[in-house]
Length: 429
Image 1 (cartoon, rainbow, N blue to C red):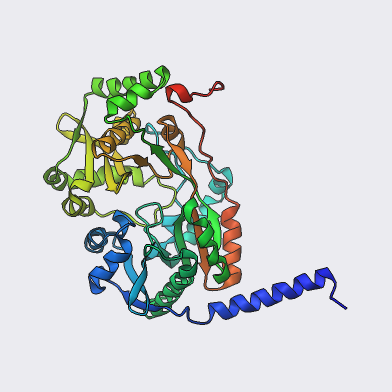
Image 2: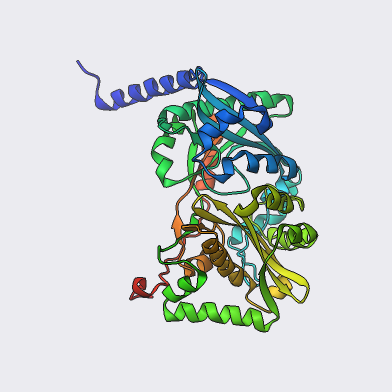
């Protein structure tokens, strides 16, 4: 006589749990080459796997980050091998954080204004600050803390990603175990999984990783007819086009001049650029790491034409800047900084966003990735949200599940819907 359905379900869950436990505790069957410097791995094999993965898995970017990156961030790398054939590349970062980096007031970048989103958090802040001063944690991250997108894993062309994710988790496990010599790294994070990879990434659930939806990446798709910023402006509805022109005029009337900096000027102005970056960085909700002043000059040298820095000068002084990275056909509106006092006098932030569009079109890109912050002004440019997931795991599975539940309960800002283009404007807008 067959067991009742509820009992069968319990038995199936027990069997699945046992099977997943056994899978987590046996080798994936792949070989691994692990390193703490990218040049310690075979360059030809790395390039063979990552040639279609973009700038953020390139050896020139990884070398730059090793030599000029944040001081609390240490890289780790893995090549996954089937026999002697490389089938996946994994970029990891060990980051050491203190509680004060996790407890910054949540702010919205704007014209010198800061908003506090959660009153409960504000009320609990004194107690949280006391606890945070004692908190120190080492995190192992598969991905890049200085970017957004799937920049931690590349699969060789033609390979089945779902079959290789177990090898990625084994690479993370091997590195985590080795890190016990330097200090424990109990918390693991895989970032950022875009929609195209969600199906294969669900394999991570079998290894006790928990998914968490994050703020979306705001993406502006360029139309084929756009060859310049003027083409973009011409495509806007009159209301939005007039707003963009007014923003440019206000910055000009306040004495602001927009210009592209050379590599030499970036090096000469490195101190000022870093000072402006820190004025924005200080208002970030979470600051796991801070860029050193050496990174932008180093990147300007190594990335060459794939890196651009646009600044707003008033007189001889730079009052704002934004950086752009070309990642294949995608432009990435990267780090920026501006003088908050000057931003109270002129619309610096939005003017810099428009400068990013102009520079991205000049670079010949087909889309612009603007990141997770300041969703409203980016939506008004025509950018639309692209969902991203991170996957979390703690060495103790119960703690990982608890952490995932807590983080999932934190409210997320939803990207507003805006259609600034002539034929796309909504009748309700």
